[in-house]
Length: 430
Image (tube, rainbow, N blue to C red):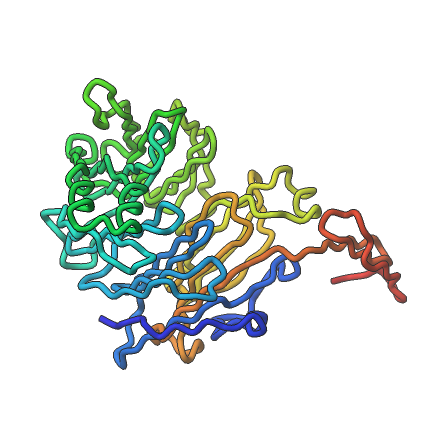
């Protein structure tokens, strides 16, 4: 397996250059977004294979996973905080406590807890007994959430094919204090001994296995939604105060959707992408479908409330947008699109490599990110990816209005006219 270890970080002066090795020049709505390249990750091996990519971003960190390699950047992509190689592919990853603790879930079943400032592995534990040795993930999804009733303590939900692990009493704030105060091995071991791991089987509900999960809170109550296939496509779990463990609340059968690929919760709404690439919208509390888009195939999606120009908001009430990634049949090209909600109107689109992934971010992040595989010769079909580029998409801080023979350039808030130009001949176009 290739090692993705050669990392190039462009300087501030370099970020506005042409996209590295773009697969296509086709771009729609280019005036609305500026595209910058933040990092380029190359394959150090002579044997080239397409990487399995995943990525996420937080308030002060960004992480890219390519096969067995994990690279942790600061938010500006100016510094590499960690570069780690593992024995097997990394299935799932998460950061918490302001990016100071990293959880890595390997395909061989190992879970690692790493203290980022010291680049130190604090704990390695083999949780999954039947680890995958092929292309199938052992760990399907990872969720890390701070306990609302006990700050500094964290809950970890780790999904496998036939159930999920629930890790509690993970006192990361106290573990950090013990490390920084040099309390010794004894203090750390005592805190580690308090960690509790429960396993909840889902075999009776998801007979074709679990695929993904999402967590949300109502007050101090934690709720977990698990997506799967066949008889029950969604199960809703919540904490039983008597048993102090997660128990099934109710489920959704497969009469409306065949199976679940991805779920995202926004306030009282649940977005579900099914196994046939159809997106649907559900009431979170009653698990009733509100709307679906059967004629719009989607491979992956993220939601954002990134700062919008006034012209965008005028077209579609509200600031929520959806970023989608759609493969074009068996082509080497994917379509990256930014859409208005709820109309799903496309405001920006760009052709990218089929070896690409959306970066999972918080919904209120201002910048949209994409990780794209790049070939040395983009025109050559079937050629494997030789490097991986991290792109960011930021809203341009201006808006244009065209009225017959007049072009008016406003600032983003429409408070200042930057330019007013009359066209000399005929109506203005483009």
